[in-house]
Image (tube, rainbow, N blue to C red; front, top):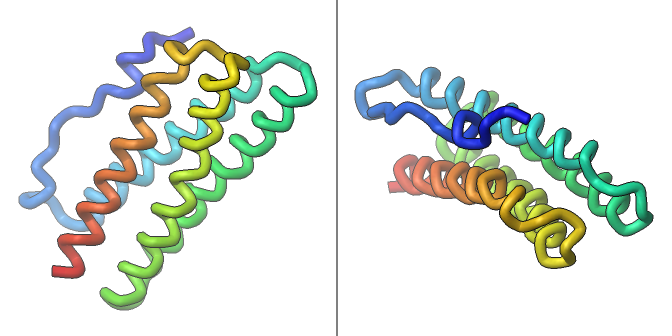
Length: 136
């Protein structure tokens, strides 16, 4: 498996000097990587019923976040942007919940999920700050 640090590491970018489209491209890429990593977790889960139930929920919810983010990019105005970011934030909480559930129930060791769960929290923080900066 790839080094987890390489998957999470992001170069520090000062988006105040970058166009909004660059910020959105970078964030969409992070969400795509988050989704792909969730898919890999799902594939690695045991075949027991509860593990497969969690796997399906993780697949569905991590895919949903990426779709919700794409809707953000189509926002026609500031109010619509804020509303769609709120939807994406709510959707992002769900795969993080399922990752935490996998760790809590010992279906997968918490140390294997820590970096991915942390990435979900980091993306949520970025979206929250984006929402706040547009709202101010």
